[in-house]
Image 1 (tube, rainbow, N blue to C red):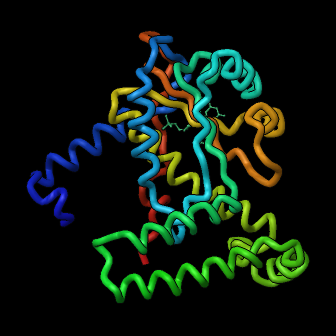
Image 2 (cartoon, rainbow, N blue to C red; image 1 turned 45 degrees about the vertical axis):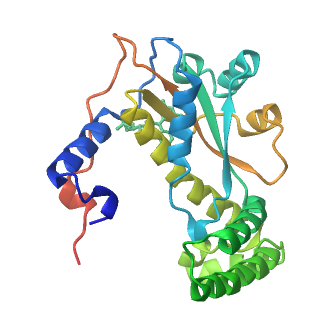
Length: 246
Ligand SMILES: Cc1cc2nc3c(=O)[nH]c(=O)nc-3n(C[C@H](O)[C@H](O)[C@H](O)COP(=O)(O)O)c2cc1C
C-alpha cells in the first residue's frame, strides 16, 4: 500500500471513497450560494493531480469568474439550468500544442529535482527528446490520409495520436481524467457538480478566446444542491454486463 495511506485503516479509506463517489451525482439545481475561491482553487489543484499520458497534461481549466462572461458562457451551454445556476463554471480545454509547455516544465523539473538520481535523469532526458521529436511530427496533416487508410484496415488505429484529429482526440481523452478528478474533488468538499457536453463549442471558444485547434471537452457546473433539486434515481448497467472477466 502507498506509504501515504499506510497509517489509515483500509476500511476507512474505502468507506470515505464510497461516500464521496456516492455523493457525486449530476446535479442540475443549485441553491445559488457562493463557493469560496480557495475551495475552487483547492478542487482544481486536486484535479491537476490526474494522470496523463507521459505526464504531458495537454489541457487547461478555464475558471469563468467574470459574472457577465459566466452568463454568456451559460447561455452557450444551451441555457442548461445547471450552467445558469452554477456557483462556479469551469471549462476544460484540451490542446495538444500545450505539450510544448509541459515538456519545457518537465525538463526543468528533471534537472532540478533532488529526488531523481543520475540514471533516472538520463532516462528522462532521452525520453523527453523522443517526445519532442514525436510532438513535432505527430500533428502534421500529412497523417490524415494515412490514418484514414490505416483505420479502414484496423479501426483500433483511430486511437493513435497522429494527425490533427488524432492528436486532438488524444488531448481530449487526457483531459477527461482531470474532469473526473475534479468532480470527485468537488464531492469530497461537499459540493455538487454537473458535467456538461451540451454546449455550443464555437461560441464558447470565442468567448474564452481559445486559439484554433483547441477543443472544449467538458463544461463543469459547480454548486450546492438546492433542497428541491431533482436528482434521478441512479441506474447503471448490471455489473456482470459491464465487467467481462477473461
Ligand atoms: C461526458 C458527459 C457529458 C454530459 N453532459 C451533460 C449535459 O450536457 N447536461 C446534463 O444535464 N448532464 C450531462 N451529463 C451528466 C449525465 O447525464 C450523468 O452523469 C448521467 O446521467 C449519470 O448520472 P450521475 O452522474 O448522477 O450518476 C454528462 C455526463 C458526462 C460524463
